[in-house]
Image (cartoon, one colour):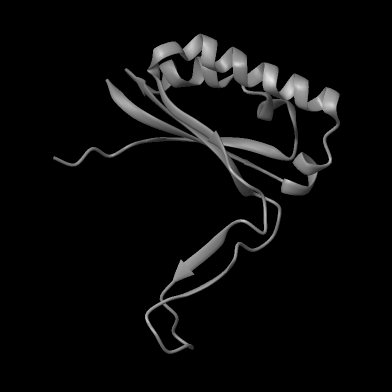
Length: 118
């Protein structure tokens, strides 16, 4: 078994503007994903929207080792993730198809294998 990370991207403004009914439908999709994937899910979380996120990088123009700044823009913002075990990508795609982000034009999923060291 390998580990895969499902990264959930979308427009934070669109998420913030969702009605209670839309959130219920959204959460139903996530519950269906968790039910389908079962014990293979190690973790999954929704992330705070701005201004909660910061980019930390070594600054060329500023002295000192690091500086931080708010994550730029709302489009394409990382909004959540799932980490799960699967034999291959096809085994991830089936339950991932239940995630409600695929029903919105402002959001998308990125699925990546996790590199295991040692």
